[in-house]
Length: 364
Image 1 (cartoon, helix red, strand yellow):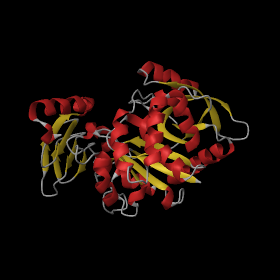
Image 2 (spheres, rainbow, N blue to C red):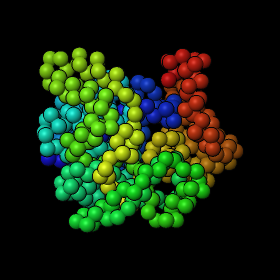
Image 3 (cartoon, one colour):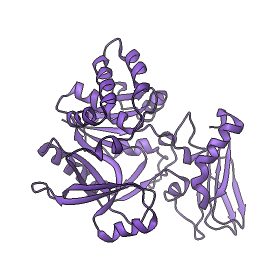
Image 4 (cartoon, helix red, strand yellow):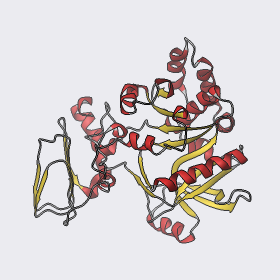
């Protein structure tokens, strides 16, 4: 049976000060609805993408246990039994393995898509058609791990890349993976694009639960052993005790490093979609319409003589006003205000660390 797991455990530090420890980016209702409705969270958008693709009773969310109540409030139709709460983050290999172990216990034949709560993906019909292609490929070849490569539109240096090889004979549009590449410099990224065989590594997958668990057993046995013990206790009176005792001890590593770069049968499907990773303020700006001067606003704002300013306020009664500014990011929240050049947005993560050191955790 087909399942989907939305990974929603990120901290979203680069979207500080709106994204905070108590309410990370995937739960912020700050993505405008072009139809004029209420703003939505990234998690809500991720769940809505699955309508008609996977049955509602087969959709799970893997997130930090501390966010469980907020996730259930954000997705009121999600039963609590379909929420997998991690006691603490141990990177994607364990989030994936945790989900696989629980799904395998429920359904030994389960195959599932791993999706993220970080992205805006359009058009929906293309996304769903290609996800179905991934499910079909795994049903034909249950030993195969399928990843999705976003067709690149620029020589981006912020993403890893996947290189495709030969097409699988009985699966049109599904290709063997030749190699995975770490985030390249710009010149290398240009070379990748010129070949036409590289795509951005999306972090989305389809595989059989039993297959990914076997690969974890082979390549990350310490994690596999702990996850199997957690699954054995799942649904029993010892569920929380075992989970909290073992999960923090699991080796912290990404699924790409732990498995994808080592597994013998990995395939990729090209996904030619608009794919926006809403992981920074410049990326979020792309969800807003620009005025004739390039200014983008979310909340009350007046810009006089200013150009290319992003202004965001959580308070509908708080006005952001600028005069002759250019290329600024201005984020106002009740607890903290950020002002920085858009060119320095990548420094926000380091700023947050400095804020925590000098001002304490109350602002984080």
